[in-house]
Amino acid sequence: MSVALALAAVLAIAVLLATFWNRLRLAGRSGLILAAVLSVVAAAALQVNQLVQAYPTGGTPAAAASGSQMLTVSVPGRASQLTLQMYVYLPAAYRTGRDRFPVIEALHGYPGSPQTWLRRLGVQSYLDREIAAGRMAPTVVLFPYQTPNRLLDTECTNLRGGPQTETFLTVDVPAYARAHYRVRHSDWGLTGYSAGAFCAINLALRHPGFYEAAASLSGYASPGIKIGDGSENTTNNPGWRLRHLPQPPIALWLGWAADDRESAHDSRRLATLRHPPLSLTTAVVAHGGHSDAVWTRMEPPAFDWLSAHLPRPLS
Image (cartoon, rainbow, N blue to C red; front, side, top):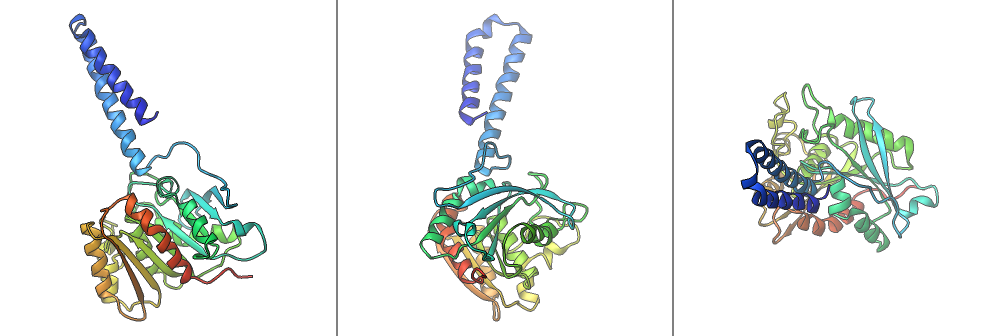
């Protein structure tokens, strides 16, 4: 059901209430009131889902005029015991030659799903454009789900007694990609928006031998959830890691909107903690808050920057 249909149902029930209220007995009035309440709740739920894409509906674009493809696959996680869906962007150049391509994992926010990248942020078109213009090397981009329960926030960590999402993203997803696609086996990149931006920075700091660079679009310095082992205050906390542990020789890109108070505060804090050999680039959008509008502006420079910090396709 679309939001428009749900709103039409709310209006229709309101008309029925006004027209027949005096003609109905108590049971009839109660039924209409219940129907009105349920229709309002359904309309609100559909609108929220449309905003965050927690429960996506409809199809996913498969091929673009540019020749790129967006595939839908299921990743069986042998290490994590999670089996989750993932979208795979293959650039047009993937169809020719035998090159092994660089890889970026793109992580979504909470609540949400990879569909936000595909639908609301138009990522396939942006990737096609940046690659065609030569600002970005042909790259395989992976858009994995990060939780088996759309309303369970994992922050891409291994929750004690819960989903082992970090293992899924850093072990199972790479294993699947290496087995099914012509990709480079290491020196991957990460990016994400909102909670996914926290994920990108945190995973890059935790696995610097595998990830070469990470780009954060309106991210945070801490996970904001209880992981179950206290690591939200230590090893799963980028602010703590940068202050207390040796900084790895990777590259970070931190972008935020000046009027996005929490993300701006956390991003600036991470920037002040940085020292060599870790390298840092920052980018600030003047207005837009914590929104799709900001992230669509950040997408091209973030992906271009990532591409510049990853190895080129390998013949």
